[in-house]
Length: 370
Image: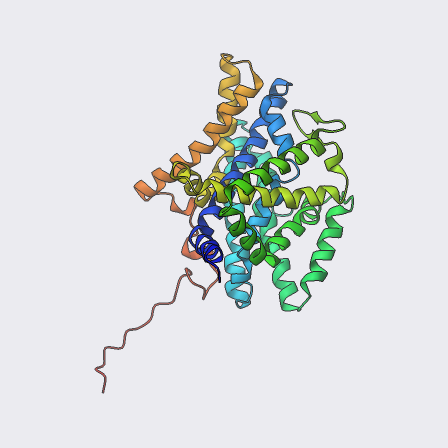
């Protein structure tokens, strides 16, 4: 193996978790940005500069999130069903159920004083993922689908083909979860199946920073041109892309964009000044679960005060508050020891017999060994 190859291998092993965490951080920032810009734009009826940032990221924002989520699936897919379901199904559904109930209760039962409506939403959230928490709801079923395919020995090429077709078809059923499952399964599965190749690509570019920067610039120009041409509309509630919306091309742009974010993350971890990004990514679940309440509260306060009128600036402030507030809450939980169930599954929320579950008391054998 050449020195350059050794360097690539060493860098890949050393920074594998770091760049993945940084990619997670970029992903969660884009997700929070989407909801911050949309909600502020809807309230003001105007478009801010963050709408165009989100517009640029539309092809790859969610695909990157799911691709990253599938990267390490191969490490656990062979586990027995009980352990796998505990880690990859129950885990996600616990946090989904907990934070959906918390968010609905705070928003509708407490602030809006509509407890009956809140109970109705909680009930229906069992069948249809509630609002922004659809991400974590769908992740549970992606993991379940992958395990079923693995157990049935369905070839990867078959699953990838099916998932790609589902993504390109104009599926629009009354079942929101089914629509999202069809739209994004391909990216989760690509992360799962092609993880070794993705890590090799990132390692290759990581030791060639000039080539990496040039590649990212070329990608950014192409992605931006296909999104904004021939016509792009940045609306307060949704984005209408140009050529990037064409089936097939959209899938390609999503995969290239997800890979580009991973490359950018690997480049950023080279700098100590960006350590905060890896740390944020390592705690991305904290932000994801708890950002909606401070986001909504800060938006309403800023709009009612009326001190700032620019939609873009309001969106940026709301974005920053929405990201920092969950981290402050997490710090308080760790500092005081209270409320750990908000971000850590308690023993009772594990499947019996798995690591972390409540274990039966074992009577110690005090008889001396013969």
